[in-house]
Image (cartoon, rainbow, N blue to C red):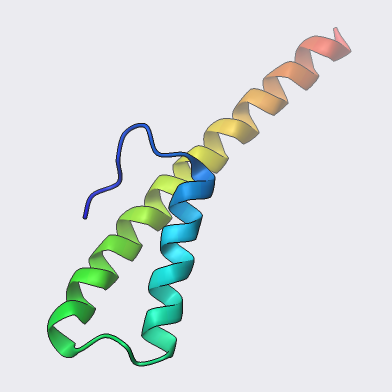
Length: 67
């Protein structure tokens, strides 16, 4: 399942936490494990991009405030 364009950081993190919990509890069979790992990878990338974007915006605001 791909990350939805309108998905929030919090929603993506909840999905990622759910996947991790399912992996840790051995809920996933070998067939769905690969899919879940791909989804987790997409979610991590999405969350990382959101964090970098927010960090850049915060730095920009702080730089403007210092002027």
